[in-house]
Structures are given as C-alpha cells and as structure tokens.
Image 1 (cartoon, rainbow, N blue to C red):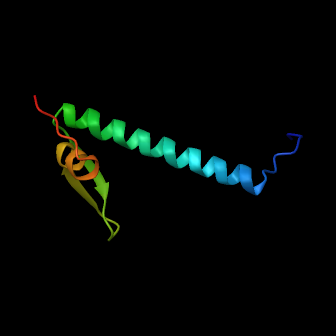
Image 2 (tube, rainbow, N blue to C red):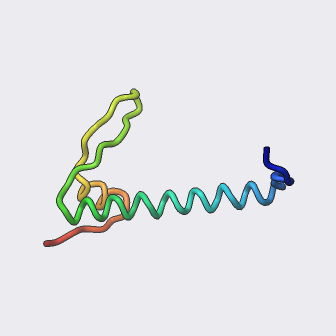
Image 3 (cartoon, rainbow, N blue to C red):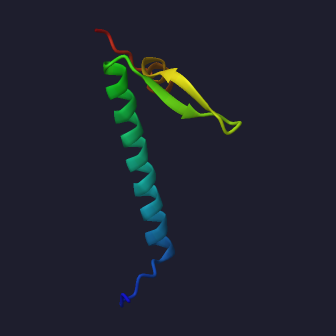
Length: 70
C-alpha cells in the first residue's frame, strides 16, 4: 500500500485539468497534421455513438485553417 498525501487542492486540480486539456489539444493537432501530410483519413466518433472517416486534410483546414500542399 502506498503512503503519502495525494490530495490535491482545488487550484492544483484546476491546473492539472488545464495542462491535460492543452496536452490533448497539441496531441490531436500533431496527429491530424501528420495524417494530412500522408494524405490519410482520421476515424472520428459521431454524436450518435458511431464512427465516421474524415480526410485529415479536411480536418486540418476546418479546425486549424491550415492547408497541406504537396
């Protein structure tokens, strides 16, 4: 069993959530950009619980206003 105090203050929890969201945003951008460079698709969840396949270049343009020209 681990010992120690692992309780986080509200400020620490808020900071942790913010850092987590920022990391996820960066990771998603990187994934979409790398897939767009390879002209691949991304599988996304839809609002009905299903999945859809979307060209990464379209997502890059729609979400980040960035285009890949090869």
